[in-house]
Amino acid sequence: MQALRDLRLPEVREVRGLGLLVGLELKSRVQPVITSLIDQGVLALPAGPNVLRLLPPLVIEQTDLERVVAAIATVLRGEEH
Image 1 (cartoon, rainbow, N blue to C red):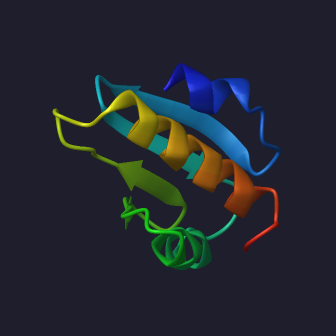
Image 2 (image 1 turned 135 degrees about the horizontal axis):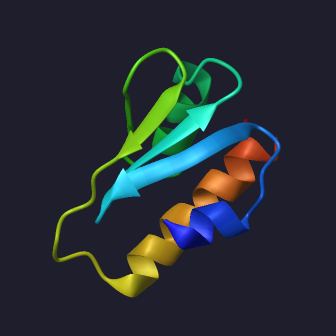
């Protein structure tokens, strides 16, 4: 969660969550972001019209978490979105 906060993406209003359950509140609709993340192999779900929900398995590896953070940064910076 802290790695997502540290990105300081202008599209993100707030990063919140508990443990591995993370929600990113966006300034725009979340569906195009989810579609782009799926294209990059990241499964994410909406939690309302502008919240991106991430709920990885408890056995996820650190490298997988880093890949998800990188994919989110790429999509939200417009490089893939």
